[in-house]
Length: 112
Image (cartoon, rainbow, N blue to C red; front, side, top):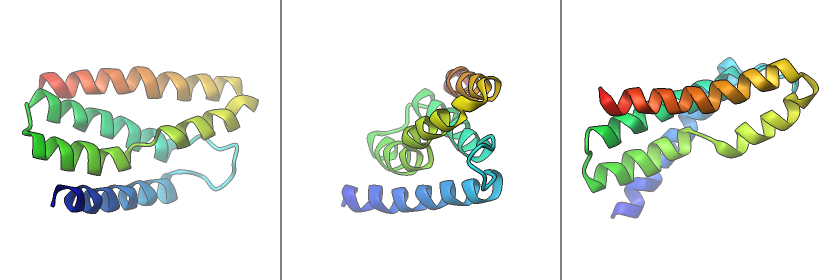
């Protein structure tokens, strides 16, 4: 049963990420990826909340692995970093905002 619940949560999370990307990411390949940045930072914060709140194993599985695992995206982040190489300032901003922002927000979520 757990695998079905993780799959359903993953389906929901992937659709949330799709909506964020469609609304916030510009369609040009050189545009700053605000949608991906947003979902990754929100996901880091929410995962921090789950871990800091000592969520039970089933909640970690469904919400942490299923929902937040599909909302956040490491592969798209790296594709966008590759694309942004032509714009060093935007590349650096995206890189730092994602990694430092993600750690800071996960830390804040953990200690709330």
